[in-house]
Image (cartoon, rainbow, N blue to C red; front, side, top):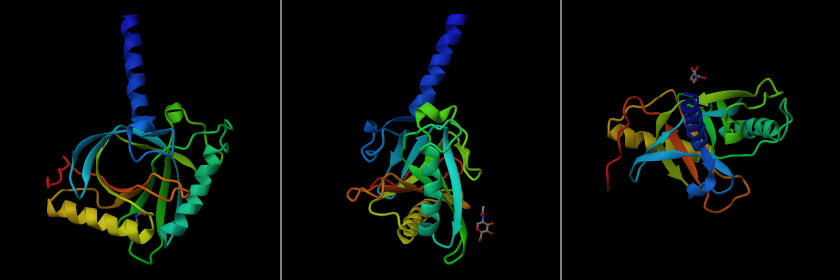
Length: 215
Ligand SMILES: *[C@@H]1O[C@H](CO)[C@@H](O)[C@H](O)[C@H]1NC(C)=O
C-alpha cells in the first residue's frame, strides 16, 4: 500500500513536470531553458489545435489605448518579480511563452486592460514565492485545447489584431465556436532577437474544437 502510494505520487510529479519542460523539444522555443509543452491535435494552413496541461503563471496588468504602451509597463513589473522582488528573494528563470490576455470587444482608440503573464518554470509551478508588489499575482490556466495561429516578425498592435482577425475568419468559416470575450497574444522571443521571431494568437474553443481543413 505504501509502495503504491509512492508510485502514484511519483507519477503525479512527472505529469506536473511535463507541462513545463526543456525547450529543445520545440523548434520555435529556443531562448529559454524551459517552455510550455503541448500535444498537437491537428494542424492546417490557417491554424492548429493544441492540447495544454494546467499550469500556473505570474501575472499583472496595465491599461492603455495601445497594447504597445501597456505591455512594457506590465513587463517591467514581472521582470522585477522574477529577478528577486519576491518574498523569498528568489531569482526565477524566464520561460516561454509570455501571454497577453486581450479584451476582444475593446475597439480601436478605446482604453483597455491588457493582462500579461509569465509562465512559472517547473521548479516554481507548485509553490512560487509571493510577490512583494501587490499588483502582481498568480493565475492558473486549466487543462485545455487551444486554437493557435502562428506568425513571424514583431508583435505590434496592428499586426496582432490582423492575425486575430484572420484566425477569427478561419474559425467562423468552419462554424467553430470559441470564447469571444477575450483571446491571447503570445510571444516567444526577447526584443534582442531579430530573426526567426515567433508569435501566436490563441482562441479558446467552446465545446469540442474543429480541426482546420486539410490542404
Ligand atoms: C471589455 O471591453 C468592453 C468594451 O469597452 C467593456 O464593456 C468590458 O467591460 C471590457 N471587459 C473587461 C473584462 O475588461
